[in-house]
Image 1 (cartoon, helix red, strand yellow):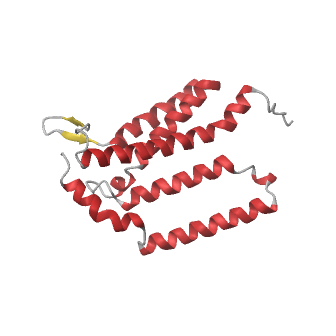
Image 2 (image 1 turned 60 degrees about the vertical axis):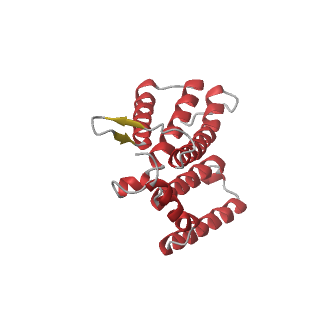
Image 3 (image 1 turned 180 degrees about the horizontal axis):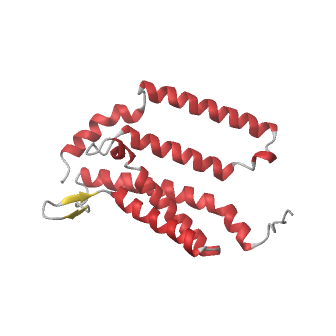
Length: 187
């Protein structure tokens, strides 16, 4: 028996707004993390990295993201939040996602440089998917214009994949600069 959804209920409004909150937190956190890391490596601001142990191991921000994602996952599964608490969980999820995937290249190449292409590509893909979730209606409600847009996005993703495979991208061109900054940064 189908149930009717009240479009004016607070829970419905939160669920409609939630993808936008996640996307906003994701993008803003990614930008803030990149700017902060660059500022530290360029020595524009003091070294704010957390170092632990006798050998002063640098704790990368992907670890903070993993902890945030673990916390939010447990909270969503066990706490069943609603309203403002669900919005807060969504914001923390977006922050954790950005912190974790900003260093995605390090997942693939342990001990590699921070400015890896894989990290940037992962951020672009996740931001694109989140953006589509924000703006796309349910599939059964698609109009012909939305189908055309979907096909255009798929073609753009295909084109992006070709460019990625050929390694033609601005980040690649700037990698030398980023690597020079990283080699002179505080350890």
